Length: 93
Image (cartoon, rainbow, N blue to C red; front, side):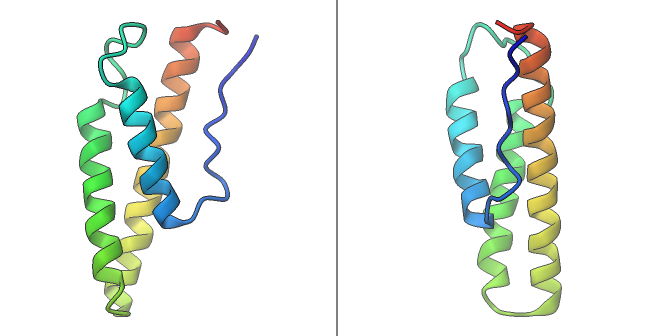
């Protein structure tokens, strides 16, 4: 049985944003995956929050950097869960 790999382990923050944009584009309107869990709206909201956190973290403030790390973790969790959804729906196909 083939499974997709999320491929998230070595991504830098900006790459996580790009990965999310790619996944969102591939999943939007995809009839094979009609009701993803998490929803694409949740993924988009998390990506938007991550982009804002990345911009804020450029200030170098410890609080902003901590919020960036939390936004990255949240985005990675959502993408990993979405990969799990795809694997379960695809059934190895």
